[in-house]
Amino acid sequence: MDGNGRWASERNLARTEGHAAGEQALVDTVDAALELEISWLTVYAFSTENWRRPIAEVRYLMNFNEQLLLRRRDELNDKGVRIKFVGRRDWRIPRRLLRRIEESEVLTEQNSRLTLSIAFNYGSRAELVDAVKALNADAVEPTESAISARMYDPSMPDVDLWVRTSGEHRVSNFLLWQSAYAEFVFVNAYWPDFGRKEMYEAVEEFQRRNRRFGGL
Ligand code: IPE
Ligand code: MG
Image (tube, rainbow, N blue to C red; front, top):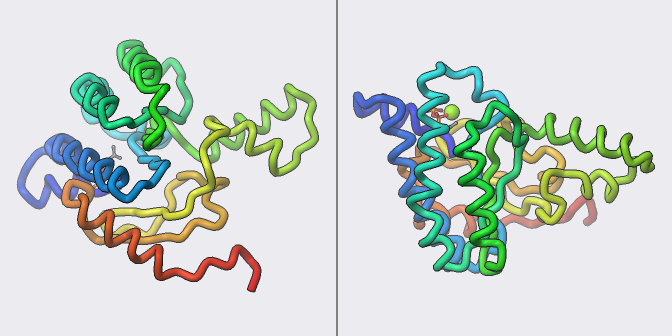
């Protein structure tokens, strides 16, 4: 969900206003996913590298994510959305936010229309390091399925459609393992300007692709 800061700067607003404006984009994207009967949506909310940002922005984001869960989890639950988090749940995440994360997962765990997977304190390389450690601890041969089974959420399917907003053409440490055969779509809109229409367009673009998975 990229481009919040630039969206705000272009309007002479504080960067944090851009994050706040991104909330509606997330709600609209989830609604589009529900309409399109997409079963799994993973959004990149905070990376293991985002800790490098100024402390005030990091603090804002921690508080914002906590409040967003409080504000939105009941309506997401009513819509049949299952909320899950992927990432390192370490000491850097405020305990209050960790509690909201756990509560939101428990509240929605019976839902099956759409899984909204939120990558938070997530880095794909960190995930792979953690998986390799788990392999070693289990003394298991490193096969593809053994590695997949040790990702943060082993039930997460491989990525079909991978969308990056804000005109950047980077992967930025997101779902490297799971995106081996993902179709990439890059859109110029900043995240706060992304929504239902943009989501439909991305899916239409995906439907025009000819996927071969290395075959013919
Ligand atoms: C994405 O918007 C949100 C987070 C990474 C939390 P940015 O904050 O990256 O916005 P830009 O890229 O600076 O415009
Ligand atoms: Mg960015």
